[in-house]
Length: 235
Image 1 (spheres, rainbow, N blue to C red):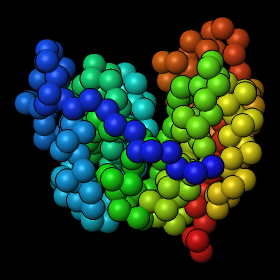
Image 2 (image 1 turned 180 degrees about the vertical axis):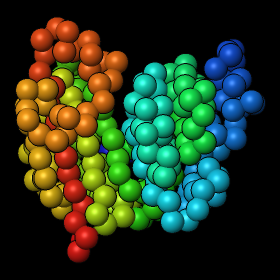
Image 3 (image 1 turned 90 degrees about the vertical axis):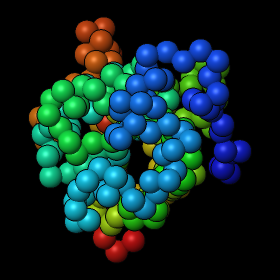
């Protein structure tokens, strides 16, 4: 699958009616929350921006939602930095505020379209990547928009340091099965996958953090699909 035209999103600076969340993005939280216009200037410099050492791993969550996992991960992995991506203003601000309230200082967040990830990071700059419950694009069927299409996974792979992993969870069996075929077109090594994470006896079930969406799906009896991809050291 060829890369589509780079998606464009509206610019924060030109919004006709700023609200409390857009104002927070450009004012009191601008040191840790970056608009689509300011974020690219951090490319290759995220560790300096966050204020961490060059040796600290830098992870990325694509689509933070309301930030439950974002805050949990940054709190439980204090020796790793975490950059979140989110398009919607309210959850973006909620995510970074939730992490800061927990006392975490190893975080930053950006309003940016994931398909333009290479505008934010240099090859090898990032480590582990998390994609949790993205839009499955099943109705209407537009698989080119799915975050697990081959060209995008290949992009992520090129931006990751060797030995890093990618975790992907979804409630959509259709999207997951489609993704498995796309993954075959990438250099990733599939270390583990399951169509029912919460009924598996894997360590990934034991270590799993339930997101807000995940709890809703489980309460409805929906199985959670999960895969762990690894970029091998020799790649």
